[in-house]
Image (cartoon, rainbow, N blue to C red; front, side, top):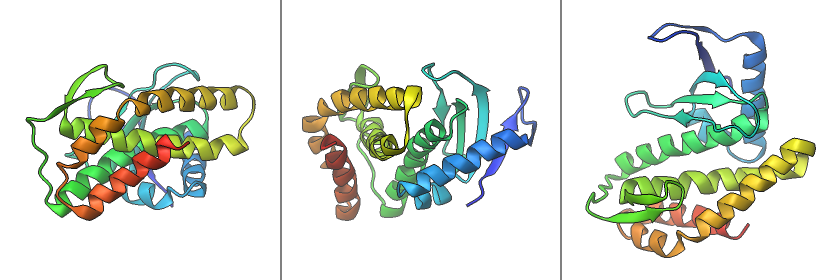
Length: 201
């Protein structure tokens, strides 16, 4: 799988081909994700990767997707393919869920709200369900990646997984209620399975 990697170099629409070291970083990240079983997810839902700012391990990394550009991911990055893979999986998960909701015709009520431990605020059901899907995916990947990492990266990923375990645990009762808003049985089951698997880590 070869992502269309672009690197934004100035404000506005202008982009240019990414330099070789970033192409290599991205290729290694996609390979890392595929080894953990997320290759198909990225192949379909992280087709265009736009790398933004380079940051140090442990700094806050901003990343996002927008519905007007399906399959496109914008993100900060550190110079490590495993961390990039983790964040690609998170954002591809958002793209996947948007597509799945559209494909199944699920309309999520905007009147129901749930507490999000990630945002430390109450969020509409759609945002809550997105978080309870995307973060478990990163947890499952991280648990797999820990088997092949060492040193600072291993400690960083261990701390990340511990933090996510704590945050996700608090969502269990609300997540069960939020899933009742998903009208499609298959989609509801898939979201529940990922949540349960991550809780069991």
